[in-house]
Image (cartoon, one colour):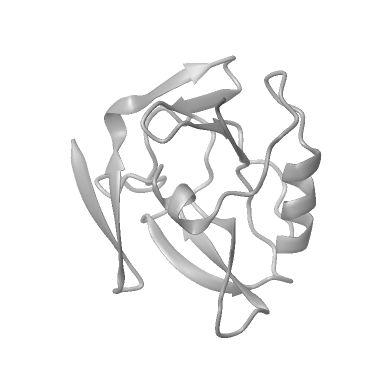
Length: 140
């Protein structure tokens, strides 16, 4: 089942909800993208700079190569057919709020993209503001 999500009225992304599966009970793997996600992402909020370090230092599911996802990756797990939270049902621990991405805004590098899982939209925030974090890694 494919869905189109319009972000900031200019970006279009494709979402495939059928290919996520649980691994380790603390991660979710998307078999289409080859990405493994942190499932429990409702902890503390932090700045963008802290989020980068948090993911780089994370050890989860026997792996230590976690990173902050880019905007395209993070929006790929959203589900605009639901709300509050608007995320694939495989993810059981998600706040209906903004999550940081690693994507810096090219016109003003003080800002980075976020994904709001209340309604599955992308937005910009100052990197010094606090938001939630969900880490990702590539599956080898």
